[in-house]
Length: 141
Picture 1 (cartoon, rainbow, N blue to C red):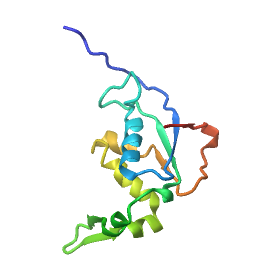
Picture 2 (picture 1 turned 90 degrees about the vertical axis):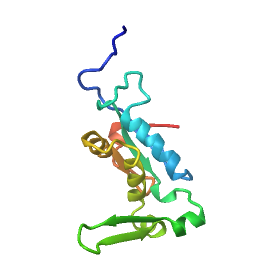
Picture 3 (picture 1 turned 90 degrees about the horizontal axis):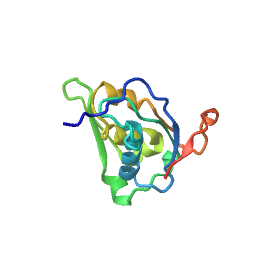
Picture 4 (picture 1 turned 180 degrees about the horizontal axis):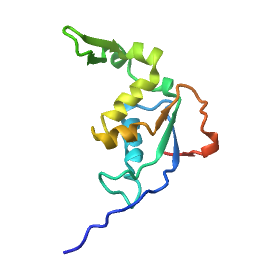
């Protein structure tokens, strides 16, 4: 019987740059989750933090169909009786385009301590500028 190799210890994360200009939300979110989990590395181990840090630019330039912008709604509950709230995708994109990407990526990560830790490694910016030039992020795909 062969033994499974499991990485022990920390690996230094790389900084990656993803441009959201003209991309679809779902395909881009799966790509971001893939890099956050570290599945692109040959040393990938489930349940271990092996991933990289992802900087997303041009979040406000995501591509949606007109029907999707008008019909898609995000729901949440405040915890109080009658506390269901909702917001349209169009309104959320106008005010907080980063939250749309963050929600999509969170849905593709494990919903536990590791997932919450990985979600903090996504840096999302609505425009083309970011304060991470010193880390020299590498463009992907």
